[in-house]
Length: 415
Ligand code: ASP
Ligand code: MG
Image (cartoon, rainbow, N blue to C red; front, side, top):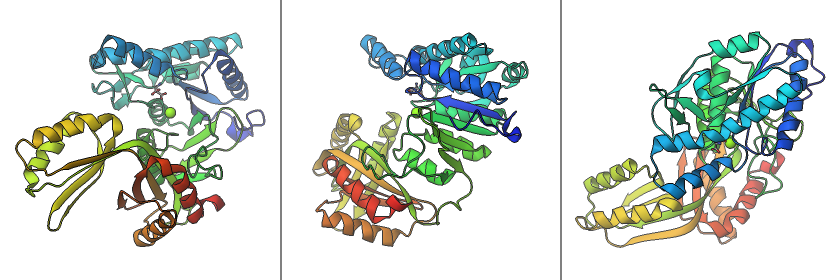
């Protein structure tokens, strides 16, 4: 935690919403260490609202428990079940703070009054009441809030989607007009790419909301994309820090000036993808509409969708491997009425996305990508560009080789 013992007068009375992820509260020892840090900050005059995730592995354990009863269990009951993980963490943390003589109280989403819509498993926050939180802060009591959960208009427990505690923290920071929303995790900030793949990855001292949003959406796990979008909308400064070591972390901010516009600043990776392609011999667009509508109803997210039509017409897209069988089933159904030609699919693919800090010089970047990967003999299966990113799909076995080569070629080692 950055220099909490040596605070300048201007830093006292600041209000920080601090969110700690699963590994940060992963054991009793970790909770005790954090409680010590939070208590020290409190004594130094910082006002804090703490948001916690479930202890590491707990949400997965709860999902698996539910799955033993019914793999397609009722969504309301699943939310009731998986929201309990966070309640364990907040109760333990409140006790650890109280033991240190610091006044603290644990609160569920319902107790805070975090209002969401009714989309169980993927609810959106619509409104946060701050009265209770403000009265606690005014009495010098630290609110310790369960992340990832809220209540719908009927009072049912809802959850915000995996990784949703980040969004809870941002929503509270916005509602309370906090000075900063700090997301504490097990890495010391946002990196140019996953340091497990490329040890030369660099921590970025700042990154714009737009770039961070793309990085998060395209696979960077450090922040939930919804939380970035929310923070950008309400312009609340967001910082990613390590709860294990001190440092300034990465500030996510509006200012693009920290990087030269158009430069690639990060490489995001998404694993376990499959690619599906078919011929569409009838060249008929309408049945394709039905296919994608059906996939959308099932909640299947497709990406890098492309359709080319020359002499023949071919369609390809990627899906998460977990959805492949379902997609093939739908295509089988469609082939009863439409001549799809042969359907091809390939597993064990990854998507590598180069994300820039402003409009990307697409042709130049594509030229470099093809040059770098060509020299390594890596064939690109699909490629697509948008305003600030270029994404490509390659076999999983080349992932590390490709990421390291691209990281070097785009000068990310020197950022
Ligand atoms: N515990 C939830 C999850 O694992 C929410 C979070 O950690 O942000 O997805
Ligand atoms: Mg997370």
